[in-house]
Length: 327
Image 1 (cartoon, helix red, strand yellow):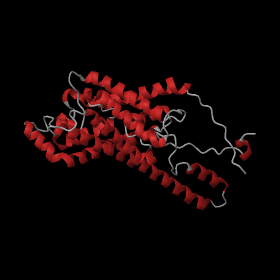
Image 2: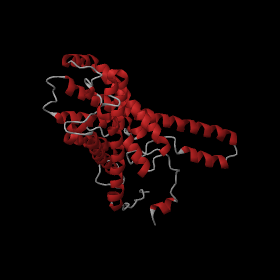
Image 3: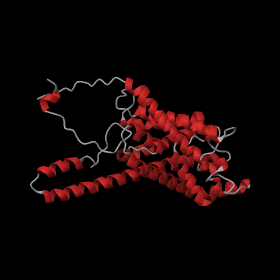
Image 4: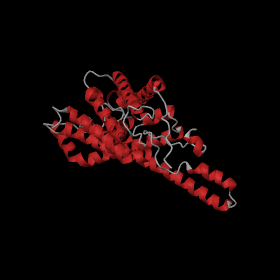
């Protein structure tokens, strides 16, 4: 007799709308509403139950607010750390990173890792609209949450860029003055948002961003798949995802600065538009602004779909036998 048959039927909790990148479900009050509703039907004290249900709904809404704050902070951390190392690379001559570009990639990757460790217990986090859309398509994340998540992520990009500007504003102005350019001409814009590298057209950059983001999101789906026994556990997944980001940057960063995240590019671009860069930020030269948005969104769908349909169905899913505890 199986252990489940000894202890009785398993308890089936109603599924929540929250989808985390990691297999371990985060703690929240989301799953309480269904239990409270069932309890209300059998309770002789409906008035008290009404109060309890309202309290649970309030906590559920509070949890959603926490998820949005978490997404905002995650992107803010990524942009703060990543754009700061971009400033070190761009604004200083000689730059400590000119002959060691791998250092730039590692710092960007560590920024992602730190953001996940800081906010992972609340929202996952997604930290990019590319992941939010992919999770909604393939892993049951609520489509109703996607616009709010994306807005929170973009806001995080704006706040992160504002913090970087606060740190480096005197250096940015000195750099532009030294080179005889203005913000409207795009002076020091590379600190904040991406642009095509040498010989790269916007259309080619769109293809690049699609491929690179497919690699990123497909890798994230593989790393966080509950059936992938080769992948690291939740506490180590953040580090591996950070190394994945660093690897993508190290092998392709000179193409168009490897945005692979619409919020990471559009948030700082929006801040720069308001802070004096104007048309050099939006719509940017050759109307490049749409490329780091559309490319990663398409790439996330393609990469996650490749994993879901080409890899995941063939992973063995043999459940290990449950050993009953000793009496």
